[in-house]
Image (cartoon, rainbow over all chains, first blue to last red; front, side, top):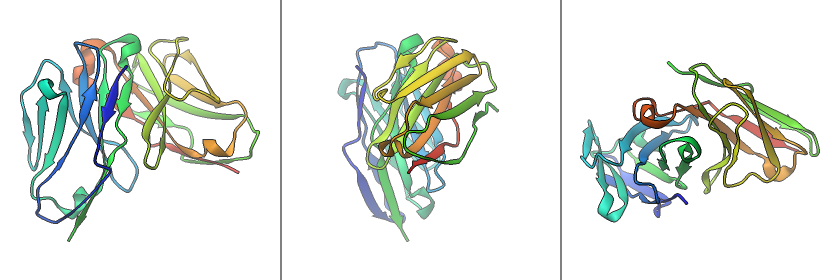
Length: 116
Length: 116
């Protein structure tokens, strides 16, 4: 069975602080995908990143960076120099490869509040 | 761009009513999903379908059924709505297999259902 754990439920930081959102996953699949989504107050899910299980390279996109470590089954997300617009709920998710394994399993989400 | 359209943004129904939530995607995706989102619980998978007329139970299928007669349409049915089914319902679609790396999942805007 697939499982995604986001142990942090709420994080509050002051603008310009760096913040890391943790994600730990469990799966028996050898091929899988990991995702991060952002859900701002407007409610729509915004796709941030997708990672294939064969690609452990870390990724940086502007102020966002992701650290994927298969050895610890973790896929952590860091926001550098946070801004008020980063305030949202962030979800980590996991999916298998094909057919019945294609379902996307979400963590419970982390509510990030960035104060001015 | 792929679009996933949910027929209603807001819906109010009475206890005991049969409720249909409709989802249509326009990109010939094999996979379609229904989730419900509740505060503190994240997104939980109700049902998914990886082919026409195929369906698989997700984590919380009780009280729900689904129908997928055509590839582009995936309907969620509440046979007899109850107040504990008041929630935000999100539909998603995706391609399968290797193409998932390129196209990921696409979510609809959600239907906020209130059962009174």
